[in-house]
Image 1 (tube, protein in one colour):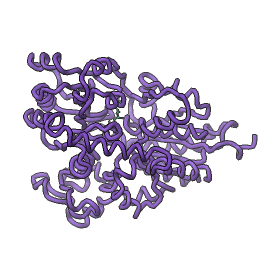
Image 2 (cartoon, helix red, strand yellow):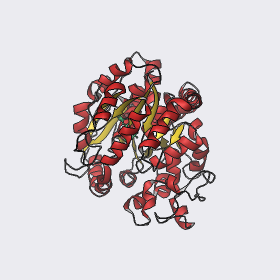
Image 3 (cartoon, helix red, strand yellow):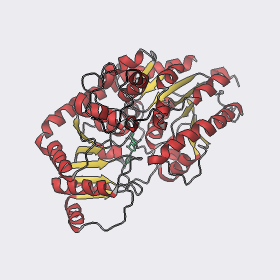
Image 4 (tube, helix red, strand yellow):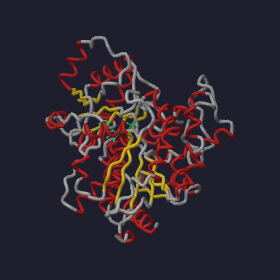
Length: 476
Ligand code: UDP
């Protein structure tokens, strides 16, 4: 077969975590719609969970050019790849996965007659070693980032923060001290808004060391795909372009795919890339709640909280008088053993609903949902923005501290509650978002939702950037 007549063959390798895997499946499907051949590479751990809980197998059956491939992350199956165990995963990827990744690309295993050898790699930019491998084997690589541009820019500026003496600082020092050496953020950014690892007071902190090379690692790739849209992060994207001129901002990816599916075909719109079993009974519960009356509470797939924090949230939610839908993953509360006070279970019975994992996109799109108490993970933030749902932010770690500052102070899409966890504050903040300042936040959220939708429709920035990405990959 004359292989030059075949479509491009793209290998997509997401960071093995729920958020990145989810959004990379959306990108994979967008590229499948353009007729590309895709090899989607996931770790064994992710693969097992996907087969158990998601509908990827049936969903991708209609794309004959799609294939799923697996690789080890080098960790034992029972390793907790969340909370504090996350850094071990990054270490293991860098040391063990690098070799396996190169073996896979040179083994010939991916070279079937019916498809070209891999013509382009799209890998998460935090796995910088994939660029070394791509260079070794002579395949062009495009990095993808599933975090916000504002957080990526903070990562890029870490060396500057150290040079200027703004890092390290001791945790006993005032966290409200302004940060001045991040261009574009001088007027509103504080120590407490930096990624959580900056609080360690230690330049050798493993997370800081992981993110420190970002400003030199990312520009090594042919280009950088970011899951964001220009109307949301334009000024920060201009800063990033000074180091990475070839940016493809094609987000919000999940809505981009929905939009393309609705325009291009009559395909069903529901897609699940979940690593947990979705409890859809919460949708039935939402169906019986009044419009915009429910605050949806979820802290994503990785955040954990102490029993004390859990109790403060529960009291705060019940005492706020608002209806609430709360996702509590089985592993999300540490040392969670004792009995639940009666007033909480009674209050929840009346106005609340708790599930272990929700179909979040569907929940946020539901008419009954009027607010989102979130850990400010980037996917959750974008999913909220596109549905016009105002947020209360309680960031847990990494990029979430940055995102929540932008939500509260720059985009004015909600309230940033970072570094507090007190039942009275939670109660007051929920009342403010769901009642006192409801119209103000709803209007802002509505405006941003409109801008996001415009970016995705024909001629919009995300729409055009995806076209350009497709053309550039074809030309490779
Ligand atoms: N999510 C979900 N159901 C839940 C909670 C989360 O489907 O009950 C999804 C959510 O839609 C998002 C992802 O999990 O796509 C979480 O990604 P995010 O970047 O927000 O946070 P992370 O889990 O990486 O901290």
